[in-house]
Length: 274
Ligand code: CAA
Image (cartoon, rainbow, N blue to C red; front, side, top):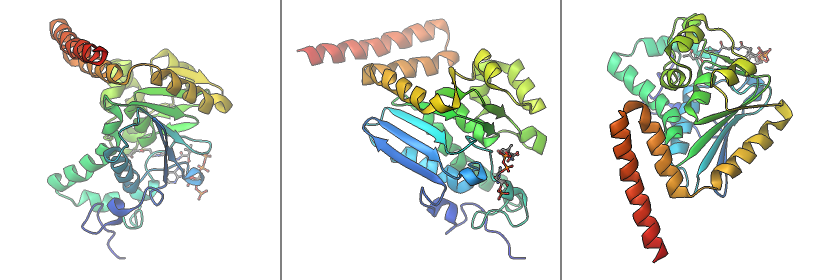
């Protein structure tokens, strides 16, 4: 059997794949960008190419964009990592977990760090990201939804952090937002049982901001995007910086951060008014 190429090996195709080849669509309409996971026949399973393409979208996001919608075509948002990664053949051109397992820790860090970059940029202060989630959001699919600032879900949503059931940990940036949203006890329950969380529970524990009928998901997301665009761009970014930084600061530090941001806002508004 020919040895599958390790992800991101020189000349490997995960990094080279176009957005379309990676199974994504990317559209920009004014201040709203939409990323669509577009392999519905495979329930939008994700590969290293998906994560690399997501990272490149983030790196090249047009400056005017303020809202990024992440959605998935078909019955499921995403069934998680492409299970071919667990086979000896792996995903053509992208290797398998077998090839990843032979990497030393430094190379492994580089591989996973690049994958994580596909998720991390969705938290940037300059944008608000919305995951529109229907059907299954399993493993990497759940983590992609968690990477977004807001989750609007269809009432058939099924979140599942399946990694521990497969002998792995969630490593696509999902553990921190999960704990921040639901607390360490509930996060432990969800991850260590790998149980499915439906819409009612997701809304109750803070995993979802809004639950709608599947047919109303796109419209609900557009409405939220319009509401988000109704506030001042710079004030929105400054407020998001404050909110994102709040859990890591004491009250005194947060008050100082509020003063610093407001000073910038007031001076900018005054300069604009002159
Ligand atoms: N990888 C590759 N192909 C997948 C897939 C996946 N994760 N999930 C579904 N597919 C494919 C199926 O093989 C099937 O393909 P064919 O038509 O060619 O046979 C097609 O998508 C449709 O799948 P189903 O018929 O199973 O669709 P369903 O709607 O009845 O069920 C599902 C949907 C419950 C999501 C089921 O497909 C499933 O359980 N998928 C696997 C989920 C999973 O274990 N994902 C890994 C999570 S862990 C992770 O992401 C992170 C990590 O490990 C590091």
